[in-house]
Amino acid sequence: MARVVVVGAGLGGLAAAARLAALGHAVTVVEQGPRAGGKLGWFSRDGHSFDTGPSLVTLPQVYRDLFTATGGRLEDALDLVRLDPAVGYRFADGTRLTVPGRPDAVPAALDDALGAGAGRQWSALMDRAAAMWRISEDPFLRTPLAGAATLARLARRPRDVATVAPWQSLRGLGRRYLAHPHLRTLLDRYATYSGSDPRRAPAVLATVPYAEQAFGSWYVRGGLHRLGLAVLDRAVAHGAVLRTGSPVRRVLVENGRAAGVELADGERLRADVVVSGVDATALHTDLLPGEPRTRGVRRALGRTTPSLSGFVLLLALRGRTPGLDHHTVLFPDDYDAEFDAVFGTGRYAGRPGPVPDPTVYVSAPDDPALVPDDDSESWFVLVNAPRHDPAAGMDWDAPGLAAGYADRVLEVMARRGLDVRGRLRRREIRTPADLARDTGSVGGSIYGTSSNGSRAAFLRPANASPVPGLFLVGGSAHPGGGLPLVGLSAEIVAGLVGPA
Ligand SMILES: Cc1cc2nc3c(=O)[nH]c(=O)nc-3n(C[C@H](O)[C@H](O)[C@H](O)COP(=O)(O)OP(=O)(O)OC[C@H]3O[C@@H](n4cnc5c(N)ncnc54)[C@H](O)[C@@H]3O)c2cc1C
Image 1 (cartoon, rainbow, N blue to C red):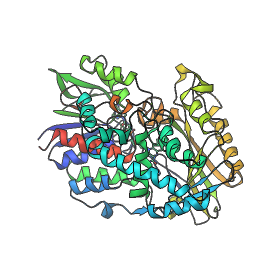
Image 2: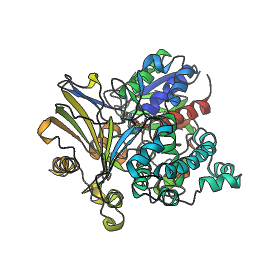
Image 3: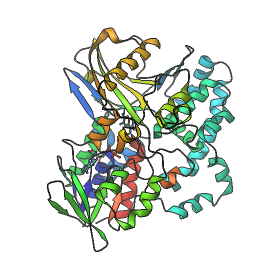
């Protein structure tokens, strides 16, 4: 039995803790904040409640596997609902598209909304994406990253390489398969699921809409934050201990291997294994400063583009919105201007800033647990945003900026047909700076490093650190961000540490 300290009680840390505790290790989870969950957060006031982070579960099988490995059934712990329709899209020219939650119904819905042939184009793309998924799921998503060896393994079969087309961008793939501009916009949006720019993210991200449609879009009744609590329960059931309000200031390295952690108040927790669930950039710059073995990791991180962040509004509304889908996306006229503003490229070169005319994502669960009465709604509104980086000129704490931008987002929504300004009981604003403070993710990046660039997936830190005894889980390590991948990182780490 090893003594394991897990740093950070985000979903990655919790999932690793549950799996390692179930394998017989003595696990302590240390969390800087007042409660577990990390980005999978929750806010409640005056009867209105909100998930403050994720609003969509994909690949729930990852968490079914975790429950099976830790002696339970996911469905006994959570009320998971497959959404149908999955999402409603509204385009700038007024076109509306409701995407069904069952893949076989998608082509007809596309034909209805966008004209005959749209469904066929999308299906051809999804066939290619299914092939990409089959090639990449086991050898990449479920396997530890091993630098050149991983590349060599993936490159062994030229046919597979041609299918994955590592040289092609997601935008390029869309151009090849999709003639309708709205379909291209739809595909582009999936780059943002990993915090990336479709013009620079690899074509293999087409597996994201494939997985979403093939395996469903899911909601957790009562709020997605319950997933974090359910995973925490699994860990505690196997004897893991959670210590909140305990920021780690240093990972201890002794005799060439991880030996525990030092908390901000000076207390030292000795361990045989340290699992870091904190932002990998923060780990390597703040908690392991100057560690010579991780120089290569720091260098690789320096060559990546951090993921985009998000500007969030939590809207407590009086009254109900007829015909509103659970998830709604309001697209702008010029999607590229959004990516340029967020990443400081093109016409915003070197000057990232809030997107003047952003895509607006609204999650409005029809769930009595989230509202004070049945004549109310609790909306989570998310807009892609540049990271908080005052040194580079993007300071989300600048006086008046957040409130002014919230007004702007509400005005954009009104222009696109969702005017709720007269129904507001309260609005709560969460900027990238708030996300950085609350979760320790540098600049408030949602997904660690982005997938911008064909080598991005291989520059993300591996789950086994070069420091023996130190492992990385969570959205900024391999295989990447988002609830399912974070769960897979925990599965990989549990496999690397092994049973007690
Ligand atoms: C607004 C938003 C919307 C999202 N939407 C979706 C979605 O719809 N679907 C989806 O799949 N994913 C979504 N995501 C992404 C998803 O939330 C993350 O990928 C995932 O929750 C990350 O989990 P994690 O454990 O890697 O990191 P985190 O949740 O960031 O956990 C890290 C934890 O470490 C703690 N910590 C940091 N530093 C220290 C320290 N020094 N000492 C101790 N503790 C420390 C933090 O407080 C935090 O609790 C969204 C994220 C956000 C922010």
